[in-house]
Length: 317
Image (cartoon, rainbow, N blue to C red; front, side, top):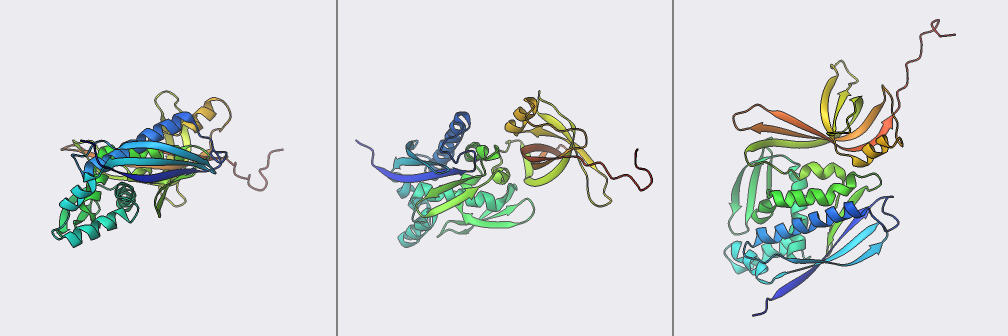
């Protein structure tokens, strides 16, 4: 018997001077497409474990920045499965289903809702979850810092899935490249825009390690040691107040910056500083001590060192 399918239209657009001509690096784009398909497929399987893997196809592209239109075909039973899972009355089920989909299609609506919930959680670990309303499927989660966040149970199930988060990270990764500022995901009238600063919102957690929090922030760091082998660089952070400078290792993830330094297109000397986006993951293995993993997601620019002016009367001749 032939499968009954529903079809949805989604699109995504990368923005920035590097893609304004309608072209994009093939390797970056290929990895992003695979990540996008993985994240969307995870949405479908999470909503209905019995559903077939959705058929995701690129239908067309448009110039401007870099826009790709995709078509998703999935079993019509997916919608029925969601309604069966939610609530008790048909009216409540229909209302919640429409709310999740946002009038833009079930998969697209759930995909965007999951992205928004991930950003709301901000990379923090979920300590506990409890149902608030059986009728609507609303759930409350307590985060590692005690903050409470509410949302639909299906969307929570998506955002805690490593497959969704790793796919979303791959899809978002091009925004860490020079000249690619952001990516917008659209489904019907709903749009969500992401930047490299949002990478920490999609943590991939080890099953046996408690990742209490993933954060990202923009910092100015002095380079102490450069490494082109394993990506571990040494940095020092100086402060404007009386705090003692802090030195640490971080993995350099900005491949464009590294390549430009190796090729001599970017040069810096002792005392120069980098303005970077730093992602920090705090990990605590079961029964072990807390550790921190730092990554330089993006290097924005080099800040040249300016020697202090000599005191009056001590100028060199």
